[in-house]
Length: 455
Image 1 (cartoon, rainbow, N blue to C red):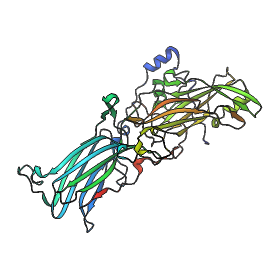
Image 2 (image 1 turned 45 degrees about the vertical axis):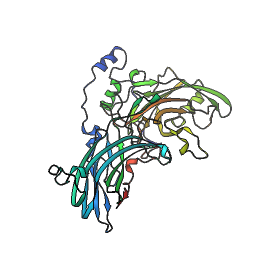
Image 3 (image 1 turned 90 degrees about the vertical axis):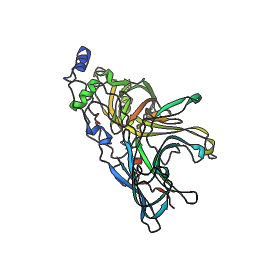
């Protein structure tokens, strides 16, 4: 990728960075202005979605309305943590209809196959909007007697369903275990999915067919990383280069060194020691970036030139989706049991960095892994999980042949949905303008055609 040189991570600065002065800098960090509306999903203006049941004349006689934080009414309703599902059901009956009850049900399911045993329900909420035992729907407090169920004309029932932050499911040895409510997950190439749907059921007597209207929902949890080091906060606040690992040890995790072995020009064997450092805490907000520093130590100057080329280094964000497959969901060529789907979803961009000139055999590369806004956050519930790692693969460059065939290192990290407190992290490299994973967000899918069972 071609771009102008990004700012380098800070090497020298007027800000004290080491020794006693560093401690003073961390205690004397200037205050910052706390963000308000830009930090919370709930500030997005809500839109209204409408779903209909129609009669033989194509006239709506039942309408479900929902207000959500989706970007457009044409997309599926989207709800963030701490938001209630608020809506209403409207009936417009041209003739007398006998109805025994009207209920709304919210369900969350983990689905790992097509069989009935491959769906685990982890959330269910019922709201009865009206039933015959409640009396006349237009004057429920006046009539104590059981209603006949004969309805005609217009009726409106508002409702509100609160989404829990956690759910409890049976764990090991039958002991209940708490899980955070997971984000909606539905991808074409992955068997497992996390689905939420809202169903309106209009119940009739035994001689008449019930009417049902169902639509999927999208749910987004509110997860955020802890604050970065005080020196990194100051750099973000001042829009200054980031202090490197030598000057901000609290801001970086230095991973275990790895040896790079291979040959150049198929003539001689070479070896180099590499140390990758990534910003900590090891939790990052999607839409931001993971700062990286790589030091390459090699006594062979020609090999060092080849290995220190920015395009030679292959560091990526790897996603692992893990779930359990039962016998009912297995085809002839598939495995029963735990299934792992692993893919690299983002790739680091590198540029030359600064390094102490007293070490001519050491080169530094600075870089970052840009994170798509559509990355699914880290989550786990029952026998399903989404996890991430920063991985380094064998170097790839002209004239160098690596003897390594496996991943050189992997460091688990987490992906969050919201920014933490403090100045917002800045990306230094240009955006790629498309997600590396090639996947679209489920919240950008067109509005789902509701499942309808009409009378």
